[in-house]
Image (tube, rainbow, N blue to C red; front, side, top):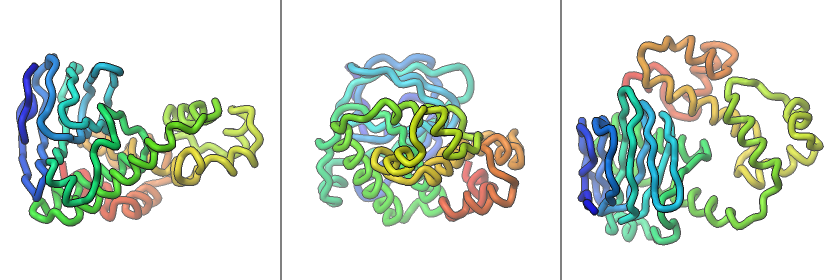
Length: 266
């Protein structure tokens, strides 16, 4: 089985940034199929454009733009690229980086598909910082440290026995990010008491329902912004923002830059 070393990925690497203990690559995927392989270092894969299927020994992930995966070191997997332009952003973390940040990578085993929009938003900001100031490791280190902290917390809570409504509400919100749900509508759809839903949502999702819905909308918007053929007004409309000014204001609160400035990073 082939081993890929620091900075190596299948495809055309457009840019490589090396910081203290980190290797960041921006790669266009050109292989329709990549056989089983593993990487020397633990790393994140963040899909910027297109679609990829990735399989490991336990699961298969179907990844669209905005998908975020974490692989612990030497975790074997294969990849299938769907038709069309596909681009991935990778952040490799050396053993020295984990030691410097006092993080134990073995807390997170194997490959993980990180679905929570808070985690994906942190990686969007890693991408942003790497484009705006590629020589400065401090903001990237801080974002990645926070990401690992949140990942570890989420993994430790997987042992909680979750009621059926948790998966159902997650699917409803993610399947219709542009829909402006009311508490009454959502509760009726779930056959759940509104007080129970509002009182227990943050226990399982680690934020309130309003923030979760905003993050899903922003996550969809960021994926659409990578396609310059889609007008900014259309992005705002497709993602359920009331108008363009609301979209710009919300986007800037969470990312620190406007949607247009974010699009220009690509």
